Length: 128
Image (cartoon, rainbow, N blue to C red; front, top):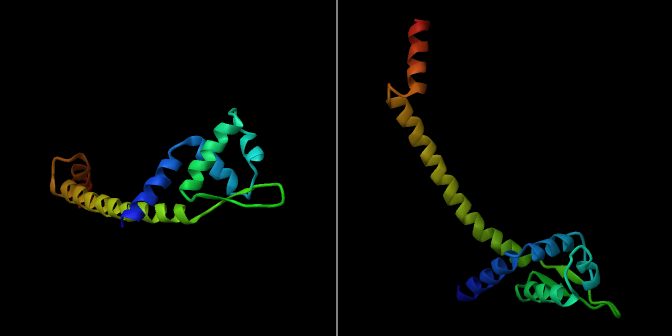
């Protein structure tokens, strides 16, 4: 569990930076070299390399070898793990919101002074 927690920490820390998220978005369309990855950014090659090291340590990208090139590729595993973690909480939040919706419906139908309930009562009276 500690190892899973550390991996999740590295993933979220890597995703916290907009430059790294943009790099991942670019790699989602296919592998790219450092030179190709730095083109859309106004930062130096050493700076982009630091971002790539953070992404590599988090396991979000891997480095290949193609003759003289060292293309980077997206690794989906850590993103899937982060998504699974978030999904558990999304389900909890969704269930809480559903309970809140049920409570609000119950309260508005039980309160005759609530505008929504009053209009419904008036419509029923007019229709009789």
